[in-house]
Image (cartoon, rainbow, N blue to C red):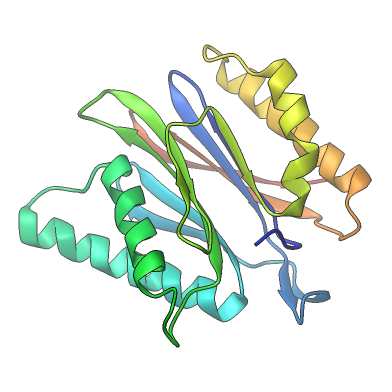
Length: 202
């Protein structure tokens, strides 16, 4: 579901960097607000960014948050990022042919303490999943960014280099995409946990 919204994900050997625009659209093209939070904390080192129909994003994000918290309470430990991605994929796929289907695209990023490495995956609104990718995008704007990271990406990028690569992508989106996406929220996840970075204005 390539729409107006945009998600960015980058995974290196040490961290995952996630970004999402903060614009909320109505009827496809009307801006409702520029301060919409599209991130959902699923664990101590696990985040989901979600775009799609506004009501679906809020409802599905809350549904995933609460169910993965219930998983932790029942089992005494948190679900791994890879398992969380598969659980989310199944939740979307199971509801696909019902009246309660969720029209959402997601990026799932986290740090896997069992494998001692970062994880980045994606699920679209049809339940198609990609896991263990070096970089991923959701939304129409992502089409402008694959070539940039094809050139710049290295698995050993420092946090500063990753941030710089992200900025090149966001500036390209600003320059070439018809919709105005002025502000982005950014999250970094590594072995120490989740770190909310300052919002970026482009």
